[in-house]
Amino acid sequence: MKSRLLPYALGLLIAGAAPTLAGDGCCGGDQNVSDDAQAQKDIVDTAVAAGSFKTLATALKHAGLIDALKGEGPFTVFAPTDAAFAKLPEGTVETLLKPENLPKLKAILTYHVVSGKFAASKVVKRSFLTTLNGQRIDLKVAQGKVHVDGATVAKADVMASNGVIHVIDEVILPSSANLAQTAIKAGSFKTLVAAAKAAGLVPALTGDQPLTVFAPTDEAFAKLPEGTVESLLKPENKGKLAAILKYHVVAGRVYSDQALQAKSAETLQGERVEISVKGGVAMVNGAKLLKTDIEASNGVIHVIDSVILPPTKTSQATGCPASRLLESAIKEGAELYNAGSPEGCAAVYEVALRSMVELGRAYLPGKSRERITHMLANLPADADDKAWALRKTLDGLYGKIQRAPEGVHENAK
Image: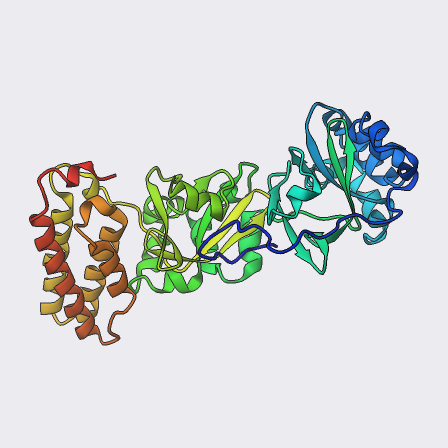
């Protein structure tokens, strides 16, 4: 399982002097063929002529990929030698060549192929490349050598008529675990997995359709008001739970740099989430991105520190729904407080303010959204103090919304 911590700027180019990628004696008979003559052959014929890619050629044939790699392309192939395949555990190649393992074999082979022609001069300037498998390979320069995931480039720029081959000394393997399996293996998404089961969403997380999941940790769910998770897991709340979880999922495989560039994404729930960088920290709505680009066979996971909530039906109504949401929360919270339950009061107020954060900038005048997010992250521990701090924020926000220019709320998404 690969992942990348998300810095302020993503997709940085590899810095420093370009290393040499060329090695000696790794391409067998190919060394006696002139570059011009070699470049007249396509990628498959070039590999076959080299004499040291017999296992790769056999695997490509079994997987039905010969015609594809003899096509126009161009392609960049990170080609493992016969010696690289021999490093795999005994029996691995024979098992992969069995008909029942054809999908897995294809997944591995396409993980070695990139669309486009990336010569060595381009490879050393990239930190990743997206493969035909859909997953990304990591590129790293260390001690004058280029590493592709766990493999080292032994020889570069073996030119072909429809692309280029870079020879690597190991077979690189994509993630074979699906989104649900990856989350279970991580061990920090037990609540999310339980919620997905209760909402009937496990088939989607284990299917072939690629998805991107903004995954709240167990600690993130624990930050919700007491009893919230237990209530959502009840059968009668299955629809509501499904809507919340779908608000954390985007169709397709969207990596962190792509997400930040897009600035927003439409979720399976139907509403959009906002992706931004604030103070050097990447955010999805009001949640912080803790870890990004965790690969799965059918998508990618980004870890977040809070559960994000979709806009409520009330917040989407005409008129001034934000005002009605706050009015309802203030009334309900005050009744709980007066009945001797500052904890219940604080919970109602907190849910209302978190909902306001999710509504979008159009509902929140000025820098209110950022201030509310900061306040929610620094609430007093004492229930009574917490309730009064939240109430003060609610009152101030209500006043600002009432003074906002007419029509501003109707334009919110």
